[in-house]
Length: 214
Image (cartoon, rainbow, N blue to C red; front, side, top):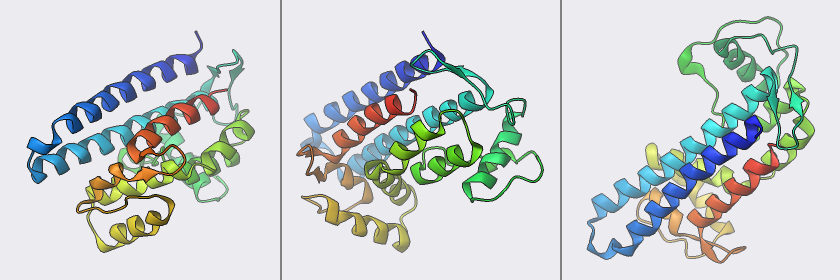
């Protein structure tokens, strides 16, 4: 089994567990206090986002250092294949800003890129000229669902007017969009699937994780 296949297997297992927790949570939601509901919903959203970020990081690292895709092709990017992890963080941050890497430095551990940011990651892959950039960048850049997952995760973790404004801007893409807390957004309805937005996020992660591992 290829390296990327193993990573998809791990991701799907994590996502399945979180989705099962979602289902258990709403089976008895009527018996819970709002404080408990918001805490649990925020935890689900954060865990899903972190799982997606960890997967994206692994795919990028593998694309630089040599990994086997779902198509059993071993890929690497010689220009960056020998760098340390902290040096890759530095390079990824520079490339994500559409700048040229003139020198290699080690980033601070807390300066790790937000790997799940589909807009930024699409740019990083393209500018790193990885062998799979043309396969990875387009589906990442076109994923509005995961852009909205990031918006909701940020708003749930940092309740500021700016984050709330971003949630309100996203309302036009969904139905049943009432909410009292940012984490309530996972109960909005996606018009494409006619299901909870949470379920749409789950499906998008499954589809996109396979698409970028080809």
